[in-house]
Image (cartoon, rainbow, N blue to C red; front, side):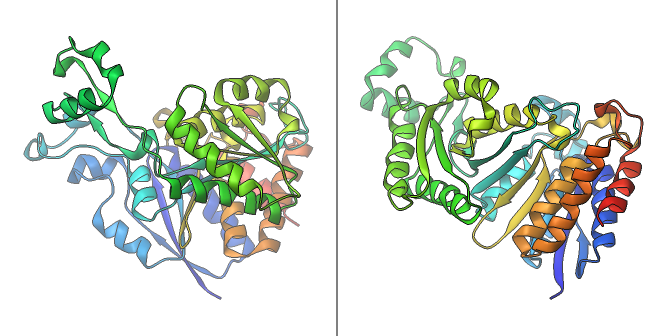
Length: 371
């Protein structure tokens, strides 16, 4: 079967690591057509749109996408970089967040696995996977500043806690809504349990804060408890987000699959990534029922752009995830073998691991070790 794969390099080092990904895919001889698309800061500055409609249409014609990295700046700085005829007429948005919502990529899956020989590992026995709800919560994008009178009036009428802010002017208050739906809670927890079942994982831990954020976190816990009963062979645990941050440092090897909401997942997945070497090893998949986008979770690191010094492992592990999602299990295993062997031998390392190899030199070593 010939796949159609969208390649979205994006900004900065996204282009460097995408080149590494293409080298690996060519070496694996995956039967695929690779179609490159426009996304990122360059298109915001030129067109006032970091995610042109032509790119969205391109994705609709492909099986999945591989994404590099994106540059993002605060609102005022973003507007300053627009051409004069667009200033004041458009507002910057995150392309990757919009893609998650457009294609309903509700599961952000973040494996955090320690590979033997990595000098940056916290421990060598860490192998956990984080499922982060990807379309709701605080990232749903429902925010107000200044707060409109009609929004304020509804809140003050319906919630007594708003009285403590009654003397705060509308232009000195900002509100971001943390929106959960029962469907959203159900499907992310279900996805985590299904993954645990299919991959012989022993436990699923729901990470929330229901003792304080009672309604939203409470809904997630309610759904998780119901779903856990369908999987009697998988141990079910609950943990508060603040305690989990501590426990991941104290005993990360005891955790298997974690599932949580958008903001909490963003935070603990970066923490877990550092336990296995940092963002240079942090891969992810944005996965829905019909489409998926795979990406390393590091930023665009503009100061390193085009220098080919960054670690390509996060991107190549994202390629591995993509291959698994496509059903190409043998190719995924072959690639992971190349990555694991290269890290274990330690002959070729990028600067973050204490070496001086370039991005592409490490990629070539991984290709050599795939067999």
